[in-house]
Length: 461
Image (cartoon, rainbow, N blue to C red; front, side, top):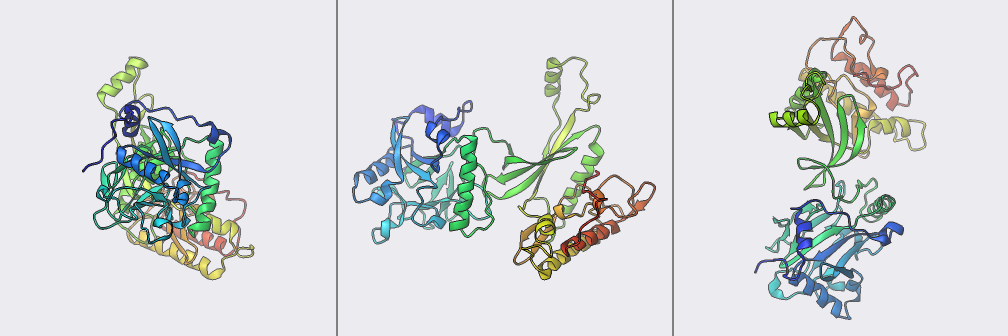
């Protein structure tokens, strides 16, 4: 028996789920716009098996615990759905919402979302879970049954695996077909939701610094498998975005470089160094995870632009974008800048000299590895050292936009003023030794010293 949409289900919801038409407008909900109640998603039944599973659970007066996760829906001919809310938590919040046919010998049947189904509908007692994961962004479906009772997410079978649930989705548990419908919140309610989710993760998931992102939106942009969340910083050649992987929820930084005739030498150099460093994985180096190339404009595209602007338009003369690149790199919420500014010696929360010394030694280890492969970083500073863990201390060197594989380099306006070595002045050459000067300054900061006001930290390249 295969799952299918119920004949009574409106074509509207089928089109909305698959996204084969123009983007749908957000569903208005005055309750969430005016007074946020923690409600962030609905699990909406799409076929008769799913609808019957909800109706049978609702009809049983002895299932009061499970009734609190069911709410009226009233669209597309669907009467009820399951409601997910941070103010109506599952029995074991750290596990998320357990979903299945239940096991009678367990309290509350061992599930939160109870699917009252027949045995031949292939739903396990505890079939799957819905929830968040440590160090990953977004809401997941987690397949917990490993004996053939799979979960289908948009047609992909999950067996003991997990996947991030995208905005447009169909989820199948046995023969029961659902759609996870994210609530469209007002900006104010979205902020409140993130605050409450952060508290939820800290209280129940033992995550002191949870990675929290907004709920998926209709028009979220993407770079391949990476969904864009927000801009982190902007530079001369492009923008750095916080992104998450559409399957694993892994957070990363996406540097979007726009190559023009004016900056193509610098952009080509950065892409070349990113590809070079990707060949030398090392535990102290934040190697690029992926490099995506966006090709040149085709003749058809150029002709279309000329038709819109002018026959005289020239992409070379106008310094138009030749091509674009996206460098996907590891991301951390903390850098050594936080250690230097907040946890330095003498401050109330000082880590102690042993951890800060370890961070410094790991930085030196990273530089020794790079220099051993003929690469100079040339922009060593606290902001470019990601802290993956405070206990035990663990950090990695990142951002190779100023790196070079030349043994001797002419003076060039690269790096950050506060950390430039004495030889990085007009008319003089420099080598990879400038990294050691910058690392020495950073080491002094880790020990509690402050840089003089002559170096404000402006980047010069």
